[in-house]
Length: 407
Image (cartoon, rainbow, N blue to C red):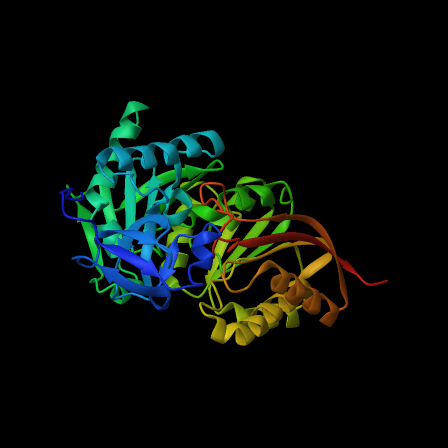
């Protein structure tokens, strides 16, 4: 924790006119917004932040190795960021989850949206998976985990292990090494969870991100009511989550497609775990190549699900991403029976809701289909959207449409 002495705290002063995102509720200060830093400090340390005229703006972790030079921890000048402060933040995050989501498996800490910038912690049954992406918060990682497990224990939840998945490239921009491994005692990294009545084996060691995409929890549930007795095509199925929700809801047949052989193998195992192997099957293929083949064969489905990975992770590649989303939605609509349903989504931060809607509209016009919106959804409530700066947004956009022929 911070070492509080009589020595004046180091202070970062902003340039005149800078800090607009911060002042509108954001948590980041960029390196080009800082006029000067006074006092002795090292990267990862807490500093006071003040405006160009000396007005106090709060406290945050500084790291001049990063473009995001300061991540704010509090808007209060005199708050002491100690173990009590961390416990308060963690407890607030847990109380919010208890009130909003099924906590059997969920995201417990979602970085800036839980006022703990740069750290993500997921709970898979009785296992925690942590991803630490910022130097300052990394120094508090042990304290955050200790306080979190203690708060959970108060509600009778005993965590048997913690695994770290801090292996993202963004760590290098913070001057940190990438890391993946156990924190504490080792355990079997294949963890069984249940969500929406579906059982999964989550690979917290080698699965994507922290092992499972918890943000789609209630979007997966939303497609269940469309699927009883229906034929379903699930594209970019990963480990089979949407396909299995369709199967558990009573679909007559489900085909899941993914380009990863590892993911398909895990999806097949998950289908067997749920006794759905007779109705839910999986195929390893490139979705962009397979959909035209299915169309040429005259295949049609009652429900088509499109859950692709992010086609862009920067503004520079957004044009190509739009082409990809337009193409995949166009192909998907062609495979939906008249009056059937299309579930389609984008998890790209830079594909904003308006642009995504425009792209889907263009795709429907291209295949002469009319879309009737059933519902629009975003990420699960354990991935809260903080109405402020760009750190938190509607990154996940999820539509369900009824697809009708033009008449």
